[in-house]
Image (cartoon, rainbow, N blue to C red):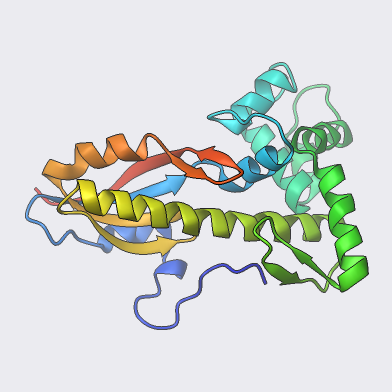
Length: 230
């Protein structure tokens, strides 16, 4: 529905639990298997599309600048899931410890991401054509026209294309700058990499700059070591 990758043949890496990814072993004697991730990709896409600046940590930004410290980071993260994806408000209500009501929190989150304007635009599209298009003009068939479904499909699909464009650029750079670099798998918004220890620092420096996507700007990336041969 959104253009996310599926496995046609080979290892079922897309459904492998993250806790088992350390079964992947480097092909180098002193090699490292690591994972390069987009940081808060879908919320960041929403924030960028609203025309506002995005922070390195969007959830901390929401805590500080929207709720003035009245919300914890975990509460902010769940509130974003409720606002953007229709996750049960009851979960958020049970989690909130302060004086803020669930409805007020979700309203503020929607304003932060500009989802009311986005929702109106998507509803017009689906009423006119029976489908919507993501930021890159990918056509998306939509059966359920609920606001959170339209928004989640749009954001997920746009995020898929951002990750594929970003990893294509990153892959090209790393191949030039790191002799031992091998991209193994794309797992949605993560790239699993095999690299020799001597090239690891260079790779981290490159990744720390993020990737630039036309018309959307820079997207930060993080690196996590999965397994290491010593």
